[in-house]
Length: 249
Image (tube, helix red, strand yellow):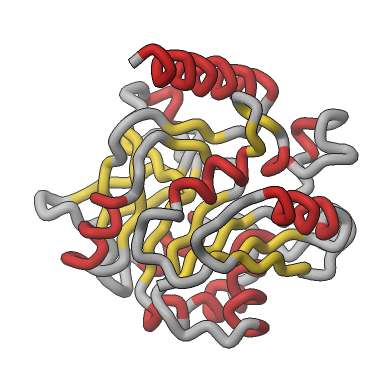
């Protein structure tokens, strides 16, 4: 299995903070978000780590990589785009990496703006037992759930419905952008692109889950989807507190 961190967006909602710095390189508790994510990949059975970014910020990620110590090989990939207008989108970037790097292995996909406390060990064991799976967070509030991809599970944990930002959520289970997907399921990406859905990663799960078996696994600990300054500040406070508690534990 390989891992892919999606870091090619332009984070326009965080302007001007992200005008000259990509969102995954913004610091939380003194460390870039992408560094926190890469840390989670060091002690799980991943062979290679790929980080896909854009032409505008490619050198910034290369500079970060020079300062990051990893037990696994990390490759920074330039998707060739230069602005929010010509971006490939999340699904487009996944497809781009699979094709350009000739990847035919299972893939762990993580959004470059997703911060979480789960160490992913149990999640990958869940994947090994069940097959393609996504991590979920119970946000425990219907109004909050409206902001995310909402999942309905059957009694076995199989996804029976996935709707992006529904007006009337069927549950409070929100999809994080942490997917573990079987290699044969990744072959369906091209069909989603043919439908003109190349941006939101949840559209792939919405397409895949009625056609192939996909499971949902509720993560342990907190999850932060860094889409605004408020969420960035909330994550920063939480991770700073975590570091303080670690020192005094």
